Image (cartoon, rainbow, N blue to C red):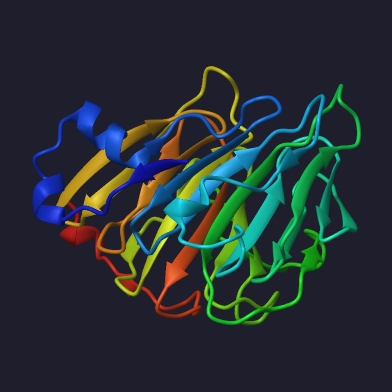
Length: 277
């Protein structure tokens, strides 16, 4: 498991492109038959992926890094499948997870194993894990069951649908909030006008992008913005003090996840367009 440290906005102002990507960009989420994990000290979020192709992949790592005897002893987990049909076994109970379906696994689950239903069309499980102080039931959610809202307009190039899976009015968790936003054809902008939420950090995972397309992910303080170029199936860490927005060369889908002081999706500090620099 790779470790990333937290950063101060005054320091980030001095970063060049390479250093910015080194600290916040996660270029490899999936590797065949492997578990890829990045631990960020921004609210101790873990971002990663499991890509079982020819064998099962277990949720495990060097537990000394977490100070526990098993991965979810003091953590909870959110998973969204962005590949072929898969199966997640949680303490012996199997859950079939199809494309763009979500599974929440509560604190205390000891054995979590990822499988693909068909090795020719392997599952790609995108993972987010946050520390937990209370255990909630393992719960599967489909797109149809998620709380969804249509936002934006084609005229403003931001027509999109937000699907909330793990949140206050949906699947319950100790602190993890997780969902997915799908942009309509002809729309490229997300989360603009921008906002910050100093009570919570966030991670973005971009997918459904053509091979030759990119998303310019915007971050930084509102008056000191920076960008990170993102490609298909890459993730980026967003500190609580940073805006998090983006514009693509094509429409796309992204998964957002948050951890911090509260679970209120609408707890955000709006940033006026006049403030951006």
